[in-house]
Length: 303
Image 1: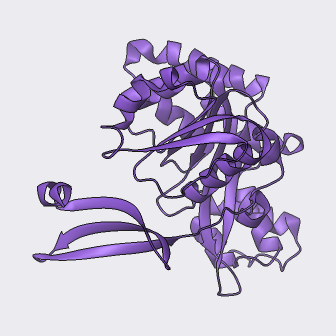
Image 2: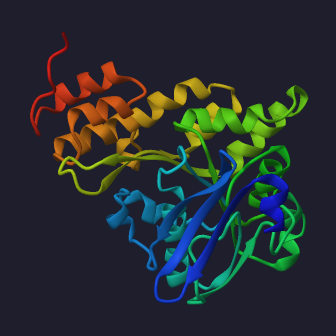
């Protein structure tokens, strides 16, 4: 209550007996109090249920580095990360530490010990928590959001010291994600950050949720970047603009562009042509891709 009265904004998650866990954003409007409330599922989805490709199972096997899940607000990032943490929790021993604002999904101890810290309640900020995280001896660290230079710098350093770090950003494609991280730093630090990022980055999953063609439910479209030796060189050599082509031609390694994902959803009749086009950053490229793929109904001709 004190936090809300001080800022007129409050984002929190809580559990109600007999109902479940809820995430709520409280705000003032026209002198009154308004709220947006969202139910948080009580169980974790499998990657198949989410709609992620099989290569994500391989990503979960990496022992160290940085894995980023990105996308706009409401794109399912928290659900994907929760499933990733649960998969590790079920399949290998260790210590998982999360820093979240707020805690949405609650994890129980399985093969791992899982400690979850909430900003504002258990720690002052992401930055404050990450200053001491290595002394808490985790193997896996989840950072709810890379909000600023200090948090991004800490995430890179923690990954560099041999830990597996998961984090989110509000970016719309994989190349933009890499640029966003580098551009946060002052000019004189950028070359060093490129080298550091090229060593620690393991994968980027950039996702969005689309309305299902049936009119019920949603489906996931995801751009997947698996960081290979060639990708690491592109990051180091300041050739991030070439990453999109590398993703486009990296299907054998499990990579896919957002347009390739959208086209496949359309081919499977899981989303409409209009929905796919609306969500694409390059609609004309998507139209050509759909016409080449053919099945699922040819894409409408351009007028």
